[in-house]
Length: 130
Image (cartoon, rainbow, N blue to C red):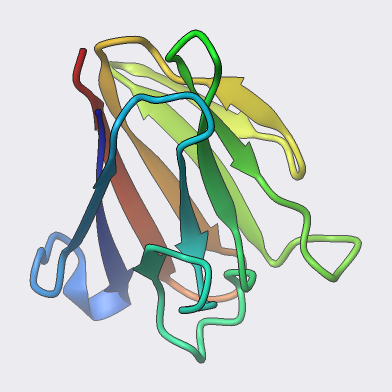
């Protein structure tokens, strides 16, 4: 099971957890959870006017072996208007635009989508329960 929690944070709300959204999916091959602005395909949806987030921005997909992978999907623009980073424990790494990384089996961490032009972010915590 992969569990996600998401909070949208603007500059004045740093540290606030009000309005936190949650989603989960079983660790079965083909299971998918998406984050973005499109309510039709995303389980976790950001505000419509947060254009630094693509319609479908992040995708968590379960592989045939039960591991989960995170992909920052490429949007309609050649250059993104956000930065995405992945933190696991004390280790943080930027995620490349269009890139995919495996998530630790039985681990937890946080993905931060940071607006490049404003103090706004989308913070997505994950926990992979085995």
